Length: 505
Image 1 (cartoon, helix red, strand yellow):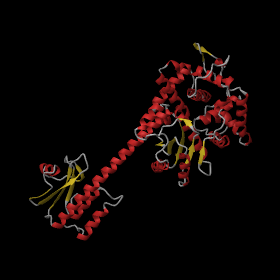
Image 2 (cartoon, rainbow, N blue to C red):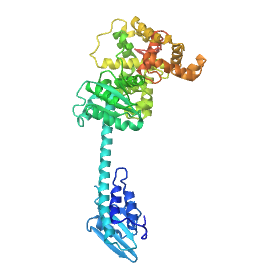
Image 3 (cartoon, helix red, strand yellow):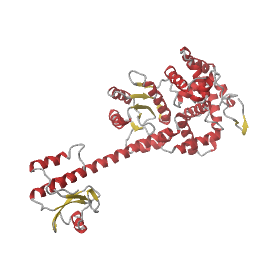
Image 4 (tube, rainbow, N blue to C red):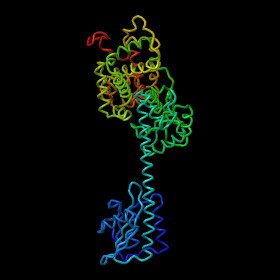
């Protein structure tokens, strides 16, 4: 930037104050200081790095060898006169890996003592500012790397690789995962406030919890808390933050972190309606607990048997991805797992093909989700005793026909009967239409928005989140199947010993 020799310049008392103003928070900028120096000295000013690259200002016609001598430290400064031009060069210390830069000024008037003093002081200020900016940048890089490691640990837990998660965490947060169980919490705030919330969560838990900015939802912070005190501390933090919500899971094994995460998200939906803005997943009666355990294990093993021929790590990868894909959208599952959504869809397509199951059918998705839930619970226990006679041939309809389960289903769906809008009829049609409001509206003869409003109205009554895929929705689907208000899908579709042979019922 070229300055004018006749331009008014600050007095001796004023220039130092103006220079200091450029160091105030929010105003510190190398380019602005160089522009100010040009105006204060009536010179064209340019700041070069040690390679001769312009950092600020406009390149000047200068001898490159002289610039190199100053940048290398062979000269601390230099002054020259070239015809009607007066040149002043000053060495400026730069943060590593650069050695030093050069502050160059060219003007038509000589450099008197006052102007030389301004140049020297400005060079010192620029060096301090550049070093501070590099320190801040290094801090941001370290913070990003640490955040990436936290996310990596969470992703390993999500796919049940607890050993690898502990190995990664041990080097940075010793003792963090030296436990078999944990609770998962999800806090929700405005997207622009999430970084500050994550920092407050780390402070509140004393770095004794894994705090991760959710890769799938911009407003969410995920907290995996091995210690019981974290929940109380997060609630205390919540009280100081209007507009923030907290959902928590029940305590789960680390291998069931994905299940706990789903519970926390479900509880978060309830928290939005609570005065205290917090909710913990109710330790309610889940449908799989009301089924005959041996028959459920046998049916699950038979349904998932086509995956048994795969390599162990491939089978585990497919099961973990499918479980998350059924809980959330493919895009959200991909972000949580750190893979592409095409990878998630390809893995789920492979499982769909192996199981001969149509995942576009909501009742089928609910049945497969039941099997994956039972499989995960079974994987944490000792080998089960041999199934009683006939249990190995159990079908899904048999599992859903038990009196305890049918009582649970009628009680759950009966909550909807008191609403004059006939929420039960709308919900049944919506599930039969695989969650498609338009198709359900066509069958009911109402507007699609009416269907959505009715489904949304059923959520607080059932205390379950329905419009988003997940265990809440699948429980309600299973309730409809157990109450015989929907047709039970035929799964598995093949005889266990005769691949390809159809099974009906």
